[in-house]
Image (cartoon, rainbow, N blue to C red; front, top):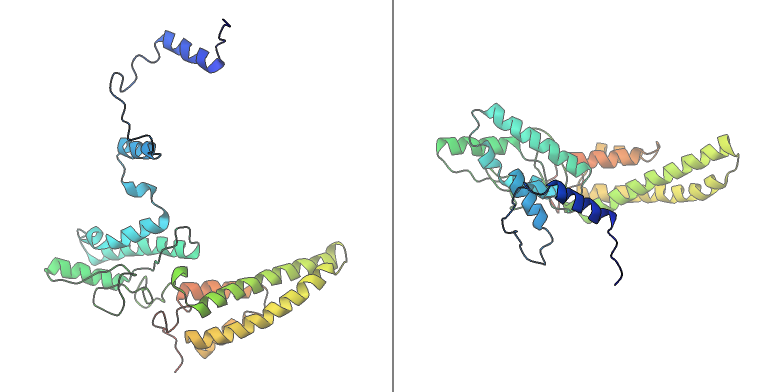
Length: 276
């Protein structure tokens, strides 16, 4: 028979066993917990149990934020005053705004919570009366103590944030053309830099010039259609059109429109700056 040569790993295990390194390990002599051969997440549950964590620790950000909104009435119930309730809502809205500006999967409808609605529900609970508080996507229409996806404000008087998953067709088209126009501006600027500074060759300008021109015209057309369909005011429409002139300003306007809720149209929510 051929002698079996010991591998480096086996040698280390054998030497450790001879030193008694495995004699006092936790769980020695106890049966192993096996949740089944097809369970690939057994180690995740074991880690959560050992650390005493909640299952929320492994949830994606969007789902965790949605659960926090649903649990908000229970979260603020023991708080002593209105200032503390508003502080909790403000902190939650800050994290919701961060996700809306840079959403990560899974994409779920989210909107900031109205502080006034939370305070009203909190006061009703303290007074023993009933005031319903809903997740932003679980109902529609204005009601006392509810949070609306289309008009949810972080604070009184603030404009609503818009979730990318609840946009209408014109709003999605405007976002796409605004980003494309900004990208064409970037390519044109790079081409001009190479033409006048680096190699004095206008190839980049010849490529990106027509592309930018076509996207510039398309942006103006889509902006006018979106302004009509989404109910923008004259001032908002003029700012959107003027954003096509300076480099990359369409990207700034798109971010501002997302943050302030201008991309919600009459078909998906109430517009605050609708033209008369």
